[in-house]
Image (cartoon, rainbow over all chains, first blue to last red; front, side):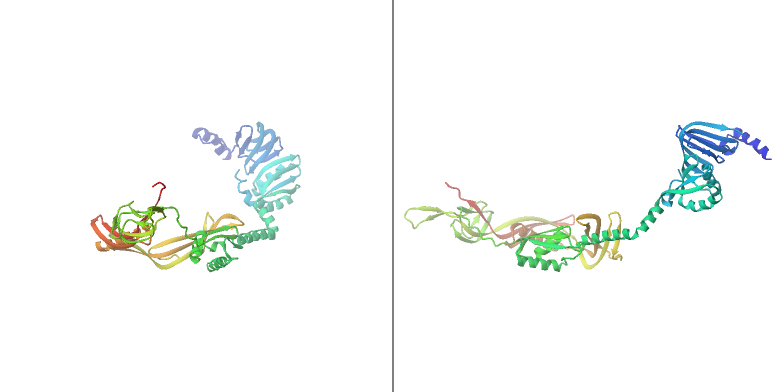
Length: 93
Length: 400
């Protein structure tokens, strides 16, 4: 049943043009220049230093590297990162 | 930045977490308790700082017990902390406020009354008058009237005073008085003639110096000579002329044609004597009533406002004491007859003439020449016969 639903979801997105981040439980990342990264729908903090931030997501991890990182705000499933962003990488399981 | 907003009012604390992977402690806070954290900074590998609301701190302690992290609190910001700090110095704050209030109150008290420029008996009278008006040392500044009102009462009460200047300077009250002095009549020594200032018929003459050239019942025109300053002395053998300053009184009948119009609809406002006072403190942005809440149920009223500014030391503050007095009045609408209107007009004309020509004139007769009623008004043309002094001086020029 669950697997069947999972297979059906991408179909919904494509055929009914629904917003992908709502239907699929994938993170939504908003980047403002090199200054801010806003990540919604993540699954928790894994590591954080002033040069690196790693977040869990539904199918893997998101790694953000850069300099002078400060977590401006941390809410459940939402994070606002400030600093100089250099790289955003998706690490799949 | 939703979470940061309003953190000033709830109060916020900087939490320093020490341990392995300290950032994960904040993640734990979030997962377990839903605590919002902002401005997380990693200082070193085992040290992390973050801000939290004050109300979340208590719950944080219970969570810490089950972990190996060490937590210290660093910076405390926001209103609750400021408030607590203030409470600690309660007595100082209270004393400051009280002393300000005291200075404020004392700034609005009269501390001294200075009277300059008058003799001591007049000074005593002024002090007495001021005391009757409840102005003395220790009275409230705002309970007394305006400077011009005080000036008016003092000059009314003390006829010996020609003028008095009242100034409120800070907490002192300065009065500058000028006494009336009996000025001796200055004799006119320059030779002059007396001439008529108006057209009229002379009814009375009294010449103390000079040679009269007209007599009683003579008609004179404006500019006609009445009394000459050149006197011929007939008793001398040689005809000698001397010049004097002519002096005398010449009363003549003069005529005035006056037009007046009087409306037939007369409106009179009569104050019944019923009045109510309302006192309020005006803070310039709001008005706080102090005394007198009852709204008077007068059909018609007129409002009198009296504003007394409050002072702090010598500076005017934006606050003032306002006194509102509403007087009840009745407005009468009355239709008057033409005769009554003419009578009113006549009185008005007589008053105007006395104002224009001086109080010494005598109104001998009045005749209505012409009257019309138009647009609810009576237009009257009147002839007023007046007895008045028509003397005007004219200097005698040398060589005349």
